Image 1 (cartoon, rainbow, N blue to C red):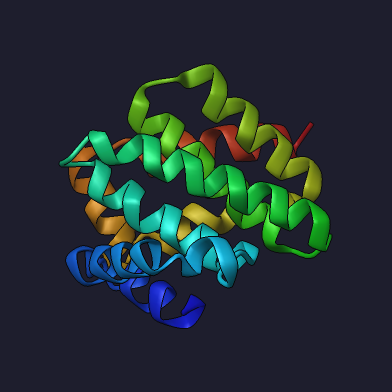
Image 2: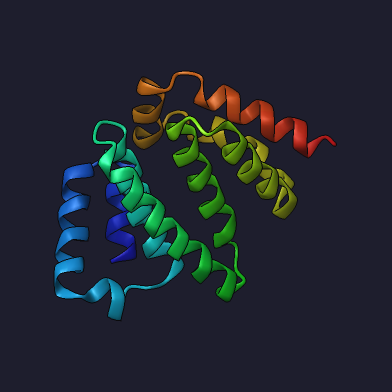
Length: 151
């Protein structure tokens, strides 16, 4: 399920991804089986992308990203960086500057190399979707990430 959700999220195939999430929720699989950080992260990313046009999906994105964060903390792998990055985007969409700046600051503490992530994501369909609605997102993120990584 993680790989399929990731493919839908990366390609900005939101409707297909949302159907998969809804089916997994209805069947109870998200609570019983699909509780790993990557699956929860990609569910949160899809809901975040949907939330650009349907703000009611942002709360659900936050729910899945909170679960992904807790799972990543337990797993102690590299997933935490990706969760913080997605969480910062949700906060950006909500207009909560202090929260998204805080998430990016924590991200740099975990891995200073993340300052290049927005530039690398610019050509991706999911990031393009964000940039159409929030044209300054990449520049804002890069500015904060670089300033925190440099000191």
